[in-house]
Length: 397
Image (cartoon, rainbow, N blue to C red; front, side, top):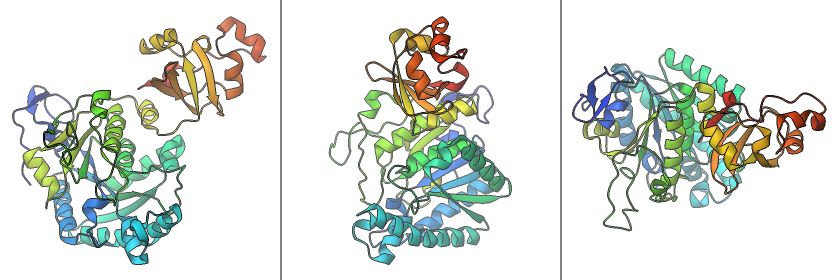
């Protein structure tokens, strides 16, 4: 495999490169820079129009994985395709997505077939596959998240290649990721990965949808997912097989970036797509930030919250200075949550400022909202805690 040489680009002093060396954006994902890499493969790449696995193409991906493994990089794969495969075998309409029940039935059949293909191809390359099926709750619940992290760490240490997918057979519309882009970013957090490559049926983020606008230009580097960047996204899945789109990929980039993980959208349509990205660098790279501590990164990456605390302008400013959220700065409380549940922090205008672990149950939070500390004891009947949400359990978005 070629394309990992340090060349003209940006100065880099993290993730394996010596201080003062210069790297191209794609070099962030090389074995020299990224000890653990998550590779996500969508249904539109894996499954052909007849509903069968693109065997030759997938074999080329496995060859790329084997080359990276030989170069010292540990790989986690997030693979779509189970529903599409199962729908073909069960002869279900709309690729198995006509209803939740159809999708669950298709996944139950298709996951077996998908696992068998991955296991055979990885075995042919001298690698051992490990299947890991996850639900949203496995990564949203802190204890279960830590269990997933420990399992992935052990599998990688043993030399296996974990192949992850959402457990669509038991997931419902209320408790599912809904796309494997965000699952890949969350899995990267759990695995302690340094990078995520989303192999896609487009070669990156464009200023507009290139299928509809001939003047659309590829955006090679995105340092922050701003509202202007989000406006470029198209939420649809062009193939009709997948559930994601560019909007889902930008959401994945936010999750990865909050944990200091680099993310790339790269063209997966040709043979040996990982090697091609390493050689050409064509795609869109979202460099990870400095990264929060593990617990705060987990908070930032969560997709669900138990409630919402609306805060005033003074509280929002204090949070940005690193302060805790005090009850005096809370103007409204929504949701049914217990102490320790994750709550969203929003301004009166609806802008999401952050999220954190609630210091009070919802009922007590409602009772003391807007009150200064000295007035809270009389209302609560016990000594108030230090904060509604403590700075140690809070992350800004």
